Image (cartoon, rainbow, N blue to C red; front, side, top):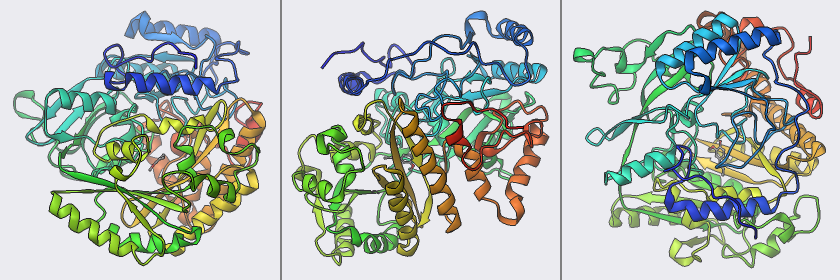
Length: 602
Ligand code: EUG
């Protein structure tokens, strides 16, 4: 296999990998690129994509002023060939996992503020020139839009490049304060360097922004896996340029210091405002506090179940374990199809057809893998001292024992290259890259997440699962479900893997997504998070009482952002200026835009 240029390490770049993962990153890159058939970049078809209602002259003048404010080197036009790159060398110019045309959801320019004061300057500039801005932290929101703005021609405000300091690690309080550009990798390495007995909580991939993931309400896998629930305190630039601290941070510390209780108590006094700055476009979060976990002994394990039809019984067995917090973390329940996928081998290794892999072919291959011929695979981790873990595992085993043919494995029972070992790292707060292996499934692979929430109850989970089974078959995609169990609910994540060089495959993926959202909503189930192109559709499903929630959001949006400059359309929230002008993407608009362009329809 050809060796590509080495991916950046943390010593060279804030968004790089720790040296401990350098060779793994190199192998991952080489393997991914070995499946590429599409060129690294194609000549641009259009000139700089201008912001809406902006002439080239007005744009040039505005950019000149922005360069004056930030320094010429900190404002870069997006006029070069677009390069998708890969996870560790990702673009801030467009969505690397483009669903519509690569050159469609693009920014006009990227601005790199170096401080909260400079973020305020950018916001004031945007108001003056009425140019939409789109803040990103690191830009690795892969599967949900990456770093792409919803409104083409927006100016991306790349916070991470110059605002990537760990502002504080308070070992006594077990908490930290970070800027947008701090990745899980960076935070983890710093805690190791200081030899603190503390854990972070990381999602499946470790290159994302701690702050960015939390405000998009992402999930990790230790007992502190709900990232937003474990944040404490924010500093926010509002769309009018004003600066706000939430929680105890609103009370000035003595002599101008940060408040001593800022990272100790979340709500402080009055309305708990933090929530409206998550999954919204109401402010730019420039600092955020997080609680850290105390290190502990832990034991990961894998349980396999025999039959696909066991699904309802598995969910029913999980519910009390999850609610009573006997399950120590956010465990994952995956379909056995994933055991093929996480090997990092391409689909063609297992099956020569282009249709979804038939169940009997999965069965045949699974029987040769460590998991054996099974249906569902449960990855859990228990925490505490040895005696406590043993008691917990006995309880868990007896709960699942009623399901005939279940098998229990410890990491020790499985080969050293088995997925369980990276699961064990993630579940003890060690950020890794293993999940990138998904992308070897197809040439030029990209992925899109369908992410509904279901109660941890068989009757509900079955409905969501059956919708997935039926519609994935209808649209010809392999179904890769991962259920992340958080207690009373499960995040049912279906990873739709498509070839981003194929317009027809994109159209099928978009159609699948549209129907999944609609059918789930018809049954009463909604997504916790979605790709920017499906934000309007998902937001509209939360329409109880004639869209009361969206009208509430729009009221806040219009009050805070009268010029509609901050991330218009993010999470389906459009400022007054854009509403009713055909920007919203409903029905088959995404499919129709593929091969064309995203533009207002009126
Ligand atoms: C995953 C989990 C998510 C998500 C996207 C991907 C995991 C994939 C729980 O949330 O939003 C293996």
